[in-house]
Image 1 (cartoon, rainbow, N blue to C red):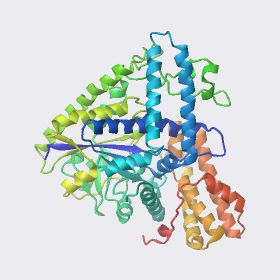
Image 2 (tube, rainbow, N blue to C red; image 1 turned 180 degrees about the vertical axis):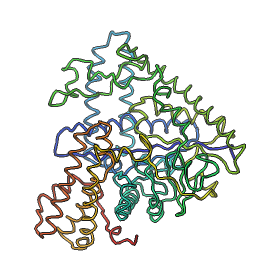
Image 3 (spheres, helix red, strand yellow; image 1 turned 45 degrees about the vertical axis):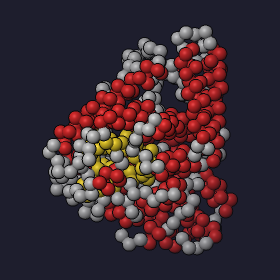
Image 4 (cartoon, helix red, strand yellow; image 1 turned 135 degrees about the vertical axis):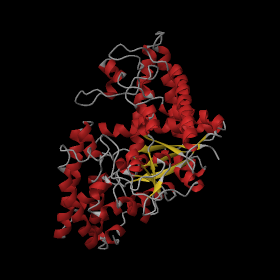
Length: 528
């Protein structure tokens, strides 16, 4: 046995954004950027590791909205259209910088990189979820699910059947998408409160990851802090985020992505180049957008940026991977000397941070596994399921009520700017349970309308709307989405109450908000 373990957990999630009624929709690009900058490069890293015989294990959580979008034919076709736009822009840039000794090599590198993304996309037949499931079958990746629409569980506990619905729909959709029932679940926003664990274990979820203070402040206090999991009274294994591993990677001032060699996120040719050169990336109202072609590195603050060198940046990921592994090795040696069980360092991150905000992130993850190979006698990569198979006995304790994000105690989702949503959610949850009980076996239009009501409330419950309002990421869009799902649900409820259902409108809605095609109503009748 090694002295200890490192468990990398990447949480993959995006809000369900799908607008077939529009030819081009800005927020759909969140998905396209995630595919091109995170998921395809990550798959490429896995392929290189496997080719070179480097063992690796990590956990990937895939939220049901993300899975639904990655599987959706309309969005996959639009992703290819998005990639074709980048192809046209790269061709223009190759011609423009042909004799430019500074930026010409960077553009040629982007051209090769773009081709490699197409090659990977075509090799997996555009099925990112299927590709990750194949890596799980090989024992390299463990796939988790997440709450059905990333609903914030602590705010729903006074509607326990809605928590059950979030878990049940998530487990079912994950099984249908990957062919395997998940054993792990990422709690949306790491939100935990007593009662959440019972909902998870009821549906076969055995373990999860929580914020550091959920474990450190558990009752009774666990002996080893976040260096080992705790088992809740309901039998759920809870691992705590290691603060030092997270700080080393993503601390604002000293985290790796801020290194001067890495690509600058905020400087993009979509804003630098003339309008005609980037017209594919200009919205109808004249708003410019990111193209993904960025020619400068972080270098120094302000506008005085140095040209990006992708080869130098790739080499820098090796140094940072060695630094990370060296720190984990020293940490685990210290911990193992005073623990009766093997310590584990949980390093959880949002998956989209790697490749999107930190362009070199997937390469860094690859190099972490390369750096771990020579020191496996001291520190070994693992998934949380594999760790529990080897070390099943741990302290029993109740985690503290907690979340991650600013403050760590749900402040983001209870903020005055978005707390007005809670009363609407409360009424909708009560009404939905009544609808489910009265119309779930009605057949025909009534049953279809009841199922669509479930979809609308699930989308209403998404924690993303409050988050986007609080952070200012897309507040107008978030509010509009929340109000749209609420209005659709209310109209469905009135139709069911009156018995007069607009079949054409219902069909259009089913085609638009088409998540969870196989809606079950078991949760509505479950004993709580």
